[in-house]
Length: 168
Image (tube, rainbow, N blue to C red):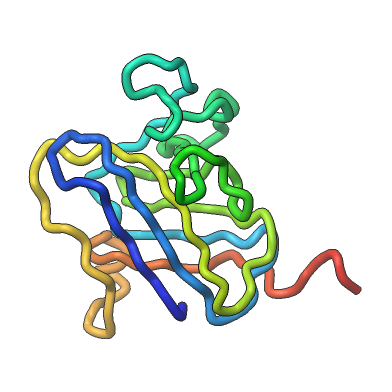
């Protein structure tokens, strides 16, 4: 990865938190590639339809696509938005899967992400009941066990499409 940035809107316990991600790859990733962000332990994600009541209003994580969620058992869907937090993302599938037990967010590309091209998106999660140390980026001193345990943040690509299936 050439660039990796994660920001949050609040650290308040149990508050709705808008997580903002920005990253760019060091190789072209084609439609169908999967990007996994690890180290998001303690957060809860849900995917309500937009009812217009309470937090179920555009801009706070609801989506009319949520009722179509088909997340695997143990995971939930979370709506993925452009940086305005209201517009469905064009480069990513509109529903990502989130495994709260593992702290892993999985996103699938809807198009080609070119080398160095920034991919930015926002999603809504609920902060944990208790204060926790905010994730730090995984580094050379972290083991595969640290990464698997979610003690640090990392962005992993895989499985990836390294060639365009639409071209000969």
